[in-house]
Image (cartoon, rainbow, N blue to C red):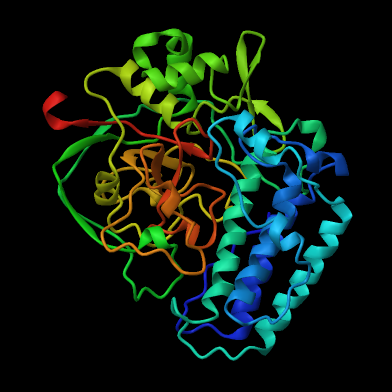
Length: 441
């Protein structure tokens, strides 16, 4: 199993460190892209709210070129047509909206895009070997564009893993080194743990020595009262009880928006569960396996909230500030399931050293944790001039915050400061734990 290497320190890195990180970023994505069987698979939309996979094959290399040209580290483009076609991703509200926007796009041949990738890789490698470093690399340094490209590459390793996981298994060949975690098939007792209150200090320092996306910067202090949170992320086994008690068909567990989504698409169970002889199989990255009852369930925000309402007793999701308090002193990666340590989630609580000082397991890694907050900027937020649309267009009431990273999160995307977000009905390698106020327990 190829492992992700750690992000470079921007005050100490040398050419070899930057090249190794670039090569690792590139290779992670290529492992996934090379798992697709047949060129025709690249023109499939595995997710009706995302572009076909041919877009993602071209998107990461185009990002490098466009940003490096922007800061003057490259003086010419490789393929100007590609560098427009593959530049911008999508965030539609419906499949029809996406289809209308992309209906007439002339996608190129797969082998031509692979050839373009090779040219970009050689260009970036040459740049790393010949550009003066002039450390430290800060947000105004031209090489910030290079680091941004590598971190963006890693985001799309995770994005592509989610899309590829939605393809039929006969369109994929599992990489020889890909390893799933074990499952013991037992549902652990999921106790509620009291978390001490305190001040949550949100925001990454501007002078931090690793890369950060613009949404991480700014500063907000939030006073957090003591609260209760489940020791583990909610497991497939726990969520199975919600399904078996017809939670998907009970209107009282869903708000108007989520009920409309659930009804329109006839949702009856989590996306990666497969009905099988009165029970369920589980869709892992490349295979269908027995449902791992002790792995965290992967659901969207709407499903997580329905589960909370089913539980009653004021059960809810944690807020971002509560997550920050619960994750205190967990900045080091320890044994968290991050950086493709496994090619899947792991049983909740299976690694004692991944227990946070607050008493919660998997506060980082395994799967992203849906939180109750709308995605909003921190006070002092400023978009970075190289990527002004990275987060700012999504500050609204339609996108929810996720924190903690997942097994597929790598680089600084796996860091404790990363603030991720998605639409409430969108799927990522994401789950949740439940929380309560002390006065309702």
